[in-house]
Length: 114
Image 1 (tube, rainbow, N blue to C red):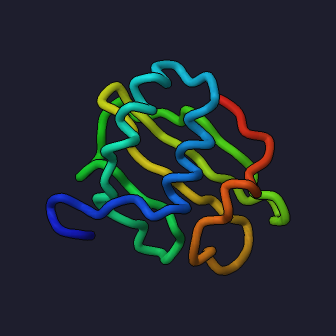
Image 2: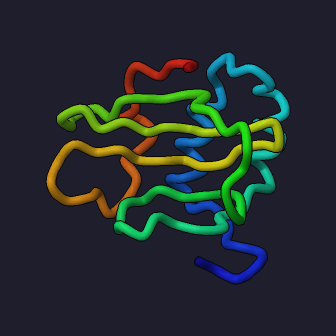
């Protein structure tokens, strides 16, 4: 966890978020506008690159977009949002060890709205 204001998104986080937000997501215009000022409030404790943009659980959070990571055994990147905005960008992997960083945005395939 970082201080109260969080930290700025890393380049890879911003690029992946932008790629997913280009999809025709419901309220996508609002989520795209919010993405410009998002701050990372917390990271996953397992060591994977998952980041959270809220200070705690938010009611009504739903999966809004996903993409597969090319060259993996089925890894996916998931974007969750709620009525209050973007909640998290999560990396789900199938191997034994968590990935230590985000894949390049150009390696995302089969991007889709959920």
